[in-house]
Structure formats: structure tokens, C-alpha cells
Image (cartoon, rainbow, N blue to C red; front, top):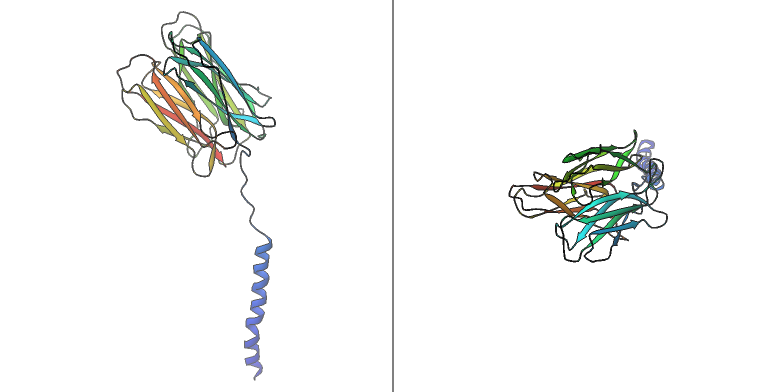
Length: 301
């Protein structure tokens, strides 16, 4: 065999050895896995007694070691005859929230039994989590609005609201986080109307639950049909691969004549929520067309 032929036969073996080393290098240096933005996410529910008293209050508390990222509620059995006055996360501007208190009044005298469920969306500790608030002026105007904005450098994970001084005579019509399908929310707008003429002074408070920016944080939405039906329900779901940290809603066209009866994240004590359902009734007979919008705040699962 010539020296030139022998060299040609040896080259493939040398090349095989080089490729083998390259393959081995790929095997021993795997790609880093994606990390969850909110590990340990679950939904906790607590329900009040069912009776015919005028006022109902209940608190849902996160399991020990977890913090509150979002809120929700459900009125059971009142079908538009009761209104949620308080959806109040605890915590503060330097303290992470761990619970939410929901308070509801009968809007009109209601003889039947009804109950109230509070939902707490909870996760393992989230960096920089705090609760901030802003309150409107207190007066006797028919409409009240206020926006709570996260501190610079933080993003919105969840929401809350409180009506002060009106005790069942006011309804939250707008509970709207900003942001979008490609933009993280940073604030929540609360708009409330008097359900019936009310002579006293009252105010509205917006609560923003905020954290250091979470991976993949966005706000999605879904809108019900526009018609004059008494009840409108709609579900906003997180994009595939994301989970629900918080939510919001908005009634359009009804201006104080509609009541959000259900503001219900899905999930459970061992399952992360990934969608929220908003269900609303006409509080009084209303002949115009109106819609209900649900907002979902979502982060990478």
C-alpha cells in the first residue's frame, strides 16, 4: 500500500475521534432549564357561614411559608342582591401580604341565605413582594376612581379594592390592571359608582400587590358578548406555559347597575391557577347592552 493511500485510510479514524470528543462535550454540558417565576403557586379558598344576615366577611390566609400574589371572591346564593365592599390584602409598603379579607353587604333586602368565599393565590416567597395602596377623595359624588401604582422597578402581580363609608350602596365597576399581552402590568385602576342615591361621603381604595419583575409577566383579557341579558360571564386564561398570579375585571356600559358576583380563579390547594372567571348580574333592571371583561395576570409556570 502506498504512503498516500495509507494516509487516506487513517483520516476517517482521526475525524471520528474528534467528533466523539465533541459529542461527549455536548453531553456533559446540558442547557440550563427554565425556572418558574412563582414556584409553589396554589389557590386557597375559605367560605363564610350561609345565612340571611346583611353583612358577611371572611379571610383566606396563605399556608405557612407562602405569600399572597393575588385575590378573588365568590358570592353564593345572592345572584346580584349582594355586593363586595372590601377585597383587602394585608401587608404594606415594606411587608409582603399573606392573606385577603373579603366583605360583602346585601345591596337590597334579601330574605334568602347566602355565603361569601375568599380566594387567596399564594406562592413560595417572591422577591420584593409588597402591598401599596391609594385612596380617592371622600365626598358624596356618584362616581369615584383611583389608581394604585407599583413602586419604580416593580411589577403588578395582584389586585385589591375597598369602598369606605358606603356599606353596600356602592359597586366596583372597573377593577382594571394595566399592561397587555406583551407588557407587564404595573398598576390597577378602581372605578366605583353609587348603586342607589347615597347622600353621605364615601371613598374608594385601590390595592396593588407588587414584586420585583417576574419572568414572562403579562396581562391577558377576554370580553363577554354585548347584549341586555341579566347575567354575563367570561373567563380569561393564561397563555400556554404560564400561571395566574392575580386578576381583574371591568363592566362596560352599565355604569353602576351591574354587580360582579364571581371573581373566581381556578386551581386549588395543590394546583396552580391558570384562569379567572368573572360573572356579573344586573343589580336593577337595565335595558341597555353591556359587557363584562375578565383580566388575567400571568407569569411563566
